[in-house]
Length: 580
Ligand SMILES: Nc1ncnc2c1ncn2[C@@H]1O[C@H](COP(=O)(O)OP(=O)(O)OP(=O)(O)O)[C@@H](O)[C@H]1O
Ligand SMILES: [Mg+2]
Image 1 (cartoon, rainbow, N blue to C red):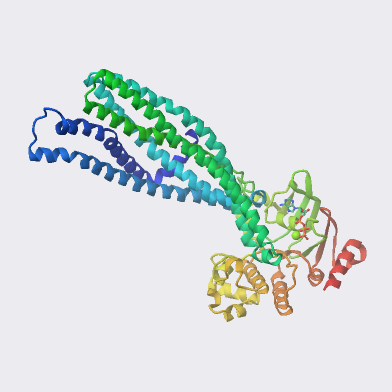
Image 2 (cartoon, helix red, strand yellow):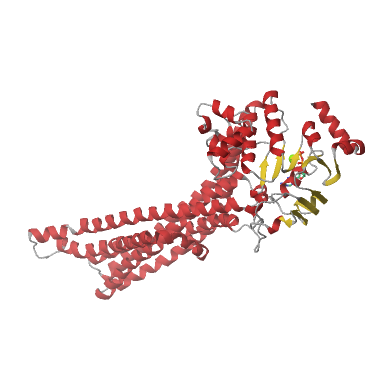
């Protein structure tokens, strides 16, 4: 219970609704807990009692109205309670999901390499949903059900003091506390099962996302049946766990019912011995019956708490995750950087103990077009990722214009860098908005100018809705070359002094290719460029070349000198040239 305390602040914006809901719940509880027993006591003797005084018509109607009266009050209050509680619930869910999503936006890239997308989605949708349910159920039942119980038991106690023999009956109530044993046992079991279930929910989302993102590959390799079988294995496992949860959750109510039935049958015996009048006995039975419901609900509440705890843990793992890439406390103010990049004895490892970059010391003066070459896995992409501080170095430092990137505000640093990746990612939005991501707040003229610079303007205008054409999911409505030109236009729009380019490995058709190359050349002018080059034409254009091998820079210089002096470079270059 205490675990959930910090989250009750989520109720703050809807606290009025919550209070009203609880008040309605209390009215419901009173009508439910005391209303029916009271009715039995008041109405029955007048109707069935031997030697009861004859009733007038209006008196009879008044007595007959007792039952609908109790139900009307109970019904209206119950309705108001449910409606308001649902409202509170959806609002709490909204803020929980928002908080979770916000946190995901801040987490460093490394976090997403460690955690699968499916699991993160399952936490964001499934676990937040479970937690919302738990919070709402707690806040609703924790007052309402005990209140009903107090209403019913209070009435019993009143009877016990006013009627003879009823005291004995009350003793049978002692059975109620014994119901905690099944409740506790089931609770323990539920935690284990709920944990397994939520983890499985993550893996099923994973299977979905992976399969849906590889629709083409599945067809091409004929993996349909295999994928289906793998999916089925997973769903089968989930069925098993789900049924275990059901097994424990559903056993609770009958267990409590049986215990209560025993309690009531003991009451029969006492009542017979003590000669308790029928109407008092009926009132007692009603009171016992209505107190059964809260006991059952409080039992279910304890299960709910356990399940909520599991989800809470999974959400908190993300909410409390360390945001390792953060703004410094006293950042160095930077506006527009010149772009003198310097790596000073940099060491870096994705996995501690397995360095991917070692002893990297290199100065790249502003305005240099610097090509990174080397065999696959040598560390080129990793090197480029350190400049926008997607990762932090393990030792040494990366500086720009002499300022350590860790001393700048992350936003200031990244505003100075334009990145064009190998596979440009477009958002499912209009082309115009996709371009605008290059620099939010750019004017229409600026956007179109950037598109023209990237040789994208004409093809955009030829599309049915021009700049307002939707790009489709991940840009699926556009060709590879078109996507690249959009990505380049974004980079133009960014007007950043530093440009990081991961050149596409797959060649485009020659027309598209010519456009992209022309745009690229124009984009490089006057910027510090780090380009992971796959084409010899690009490499030759670079004023500086870094040769990577086994996590180190083994040589650097111009094309001419490296070609003369470095065997690795020569073989890489020759191989690429012959491929082209
Ligand atoms: N997230 C990661 N976790 C662990 N190891 C990684 C991660 N990303 C890359 N590596 C490893 O780091 C090394 C360098 O990878 P990097 O992507 O920098 O190579 P690269 O030179 O860009 O290769 P390519 O030319 O194939 O793109 C590789 O051995 C790779 O396996
Ligand atoms: Mg790479």
